[in-house]
Structure formats: C-alpha cells, structure tokens
Image (cartoon, rainbow, N blue to C red; front, side, top):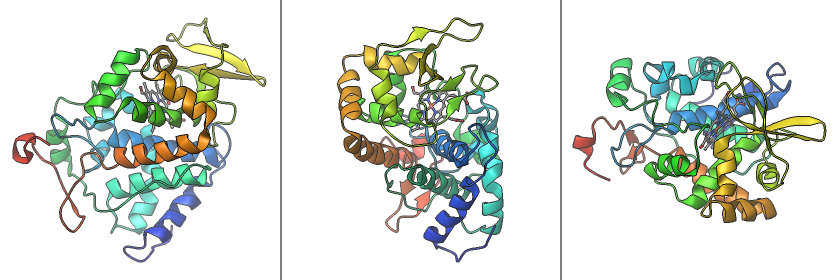
Length: 293
Ligand code: CCH
C-alpha cells in the first residue's frame, strides 16, 4: 500500500480501488470485495439511535467488543483486516473515515452513484467503544427473519422515512448471504457485483417460493439458471402498503433509485457524527451530555 499525502482523499480512494481488485472471494471478482466494503460502511453506521444519540459510524467501535463479537457483524472482520494495510500506510486517516470512504468508493466503482462523503470522524479506544455501545448492540441491527414493522422500527429509530428505507434496501443488489455468517444462503440478483435496481425488479416478480431446506426461512427462485434468494425482510417491502410504492418506483426508474440511494446512504454514514463548525467530528460520549437531538 502506498502512503498518500495527508488529506488527499481522492488518492486514498484510488488506494481503496486497488484493494477492491481482488479476484478471490465469493463471486470470484472484484465485486465481493466491493460488497464487503459496502457492508462495512453499513455496519459501521447502522446501529445509530436518534433517540439515545449514540452508535453510528463515528468512533469505529466495530473494532472492539461488544460490536466486534456481535453475531450480526459476523464475517465483517474480513473487511476490517482488508483495510488495515491502507490504514497502516496512512495513519492520518481514522478507521471510521476509512471505512465509510471505502464503502462509498466501492459503490461507485461497481457502477452505483456518487455518495456525498466528508472526513472528520474520530476513533474510539476500546474503553470508549465499550461505554458507547454498552447494552445497545444486537437489538439495533435488523433481523432478516422478521417483517415490515420490525424494519420500519429499526430504521425509523435511525431517522429514515419509508422512502429512504426502501432506497437503502436496494443495496441487496450486491453480495450474498452466507450460511456460516447469518445462516441464510445465496445472492439476491444474478449479477451481485453490479449496483443496479435489479433487486426491486425481482421483488415485484411473482416467482418467489419458500425454500425447503434445513436453514432459516427464506424465499427462493431460479432466474437465468441462477438460484436467488430473498429474506423475509426483503419480501416485507412488497407486502407493506407504505413500502411497496417505492419498490415500484425504483423498479421503473433506476435514476431515481440512484439519486435516492445516494442521499440516504450519505445520511447513513453521517449518523452519530457530531461535527463542529470546522466540520471536525467530536466523539459522542453520552446522551446526557449531548442533550436530545
Ligand atoms: Fe443487508 N444483509 N440487511 N443491508 N447486506 C445481508 C447482507 C448484505 C439485512 C440483512 C442482511 C441493509 C439492510 C438489511 C448489505 C447491505 C445492506 C445479510 C447476509 C443479511 C442477513 C449476511 C451474510 O450471511 O453474510 C436486513 C434484515 C436489512 C434491513 O432490514 C442495508 C440498509 C444495506 C446497505 C445500505 C450487503 C451489501 C450485503 C451483502 C454482504 C456480503 O458479504 O456479500
């Protein structure tokens, strides 16, 4: 990994792109690495609570317990270790900034939209991470076995509307479920290394049947010779009257999906990042100190 000039985030994006080009993971191309990075950005950010004002991408608490050992984060250590060489060569960037930069760079590299991103996140030490996330991990992240009310509850807590929830869910156009991680199995779309609105198109097709197997309940369909899957939470998007119109809009209009996804994902990676006037983020330590947002 090269050392790049401090503050040169464009050069750092190029470093991230270099590590995306790895042929040896899941789908045998750069794609899976992209997916890892994307999922890293989400899981580094996705446990924020608007009410309690803690969690979020600031601090990069996922490097330490309890987040690092949360079953919902299983498999993400690959992504962390993958970014370590870049961080080691460029210690001027925080882990929290690097993870979110990697996620946004990866989305664009896979044909997705540009995502607004700015630096300034700081990292916790292990004690701060434990304090910050005390008792709040686990039930913060969505459970794929549940339904629409669960999805809405989790994302509303993070400050997202139905429209934004559906847009964010479109990230399941990428990557796959792994039996040894979540227990679920398979990709959502035929080309899981290309960012597109395929996920929404497929959701609307009447092809999905419960999979008969010894794993957790999920849906399956075979499309163009490839076995695809949907989680119960994915199907919830077409079963719910508030979510479904957005699935239909995004299936019909990829540009609209890209635009909405960009805004919602940009918002996701700002959760828990409390910037001062200079744009630098302070660590959010306790809800009492911060007051209610
Ligand atoms: Fe997700 N996701 N996700 N997801 N997710 C999984 C994999 C990916 C849920 C459950 C799962 C978002 C929302 C939700 C990605 C991005 C996003 C897996 C399989 C489960 C289970 C994990 C495994 O076995 O490896 C649920 C439930 C929700 C909401 O209700 C959002 C939001 C995003 C990003 C914006 C990506 C990408 C993957 C593929 C990971 C990989 O390793 O290929």
